[in-house]
Length: 303
Image 1 (cartoon, helix red, strand yellow):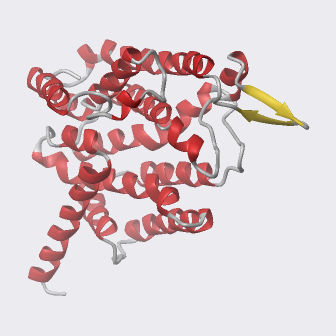
Image 2 (image 1 turned 45 degrees about the vertical axis):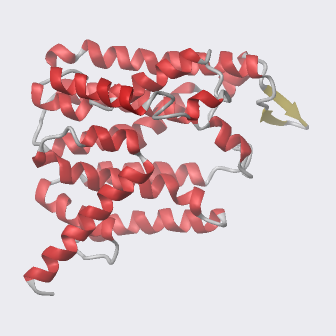
């Protein structure tokens, strides 16, 4: 492949990544547009991988096919770090940014392995504690922020800690928002920890097996409130670190804004995840208002 052809293929690969994020992760797509140019390519490539792995089980006609797709991505990461080209636009973009920005392999592997472990859960399995969900959220969401910080050459413990909290908050809140979708899927896998479900009367045992029922909207709202409160604490901890986070890291941490928007939307519907208002606009907020909030935070250098 000559230089002109390789350059054209790479441009097409990055364009594909941008389109994937725009189509399937729009609230974060708008966040990435606020990043400086030197971080943007890496951020879109990393987010595009997150889109690929997050959707793998949803778009597969058979769960085994979805799992195979996730394992393929796990193997693709090994090939990327062996500097082997792969005929997939997201993989091609990742190959470029990984070697250009020295992105840690551990973060990429960790994010994909978390999806694989989740996909391998049996029907009816649920996390036991809220800490299990926090770990999953960090592995799948915080890692995106860690890698974007790396791409920008930002080495800051405070920024890493803030990114950890923001990723956990984002992950928890998006899992909460997805509860109706997962309840309607054949797998019936619930992301409500069994400890929380039992506390609010949602856990029922049949013949030694426990099942989480979402029949009582009032009890479910109470469980959701408890989970959302944990996310809120993470957002507060991230903002408490703002004074020690380098200014150049603040654009990377803008995903705190959509997390707060979703939290506010949940409050407006009294934490009823089946309220149709949550599905309107962007995370339950009118698109123009969401974009204004994001721009306001970006302009002020806040997150």
